[in-house]
Image (cartoon, rainbow, N blue to C red; front, top):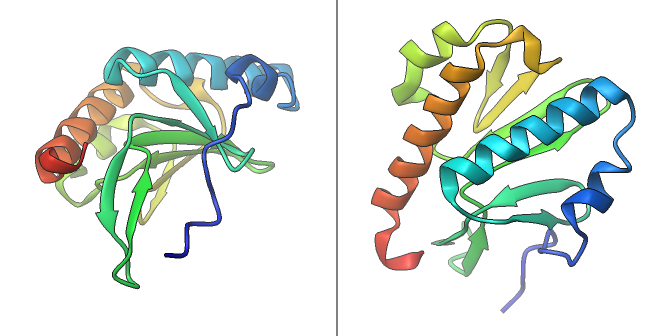
Length: 141
């Protein structure tokens, strides 16, 4: 069975965050990690050296292979911070509308900085997404 290219690493969150450029982005990523840890109850795992994931679920990918991925996560990118809301956004239109300055695409939420959005709404969105994923994949968690 071929595995996904992006795999969990042994990099600590502190070591990962020390590589994030810009004090504001580093502070925002630290805060986002705190929210995701609180919501999921899981420790952060660095995936592929560039993404921080919390929790996990198994699924069958497009090649009919079993794969594992995180329930929710984020990645500091050059242009923005990308938050991965694995259940997508179709059912969360009201919450997304209340978030503030952001963009969405697929399962990605793009923000420039945390102060651009309502953090309480973000936490609600993460809670609902994690609950949705656990409901959709109960036997695979």
